[in-house]
Length: 298
Image (cartoon, rainbow, N blue to C red; front, side, top):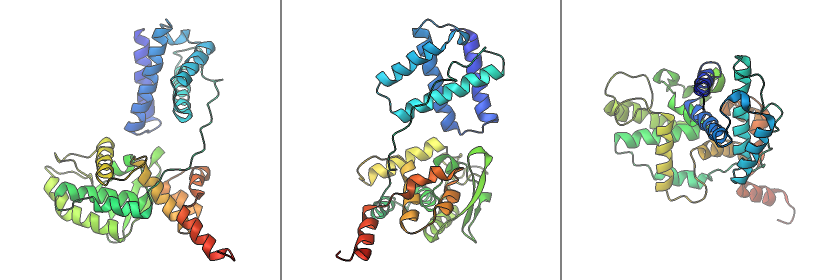
């Protein structure tokens, strides 16, 4: 592979960081996707990015399907590579974009996975709050469930973003889009306890980051994912487990209890209402309650 390939990857990463303001987590995924395509190029004897043609892209797409990857994963890889080559065309590093005419496979329409309210209670009960790290973990869990924020958004919270007097938090979302989100009494109490006790014990030097790691530095989104995964495993909850499930639970519980979609859209920070519409599903408990209330022979 030519040195120009590595230069192009570095240029793309800078583009994602500066122009697109993507999170480090997203950038790492994109970087992995592009390196995977570089490996495919090496297998096919393609030494330069300008050597890639549409038929090579079709062959690459076939390879992804043969690997049994989910449609959503394949769609992300194709979208990433399309953006990658689009930037290179703009910068005059390649002549054309071989991914331009490649259709992105439509993802399967699946209901978002979420925790039931009883399961969330089980998750909260699994956290020990008699240590500084335990208080921090409880604050993270309470804040994420109270606000529905993304893991990366949680990691970026500064002390100055929190107003405990009126229980409101300023979230710096994707694309530099800020939004204010209220939080309830449980999150308020957890934050108060953490800030006045646990955080002071963790802090080694002055820092404005709300959540700190065991060394006193800023907790990263990767660190938060690790913490949440351990809490979920410790609670013995079954089924698919991942931190984003807490965000799904936040939206599902709001919608099931009567919140309107526009409000949920604003709280989640979705640019389009269509992104929020996946939460219009209802839980079996809500269905049964509605059925018993309205059916004449329930």
